[in-house]
Length: 77
Image (cartoon, rainbow, N blue to C red; front, side, top):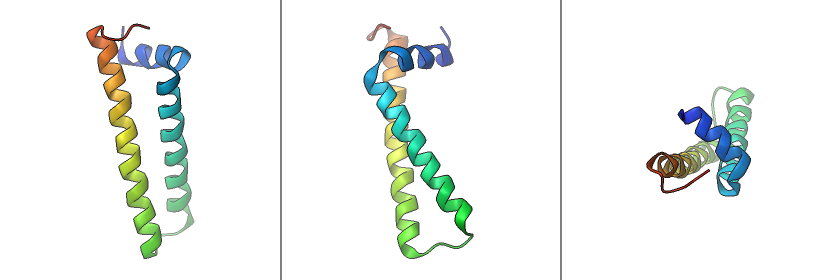
């Protein structure tokens, strides 16, 4: 099973994975909104950008952990 197939199956069956993926997408949309609004950012916006990027990375790490568990056979689909 490819990684993409695992992700698709997790999206159908694994509630935590779905929530992680949805939050990651929401944060990505917020970043796009911030970046599209202007070229230079206030200090507050810079802090928000860094915070969003940090949270996205945490979510991605957790999703990758779940995918790895499936690959190792520790989590069944």
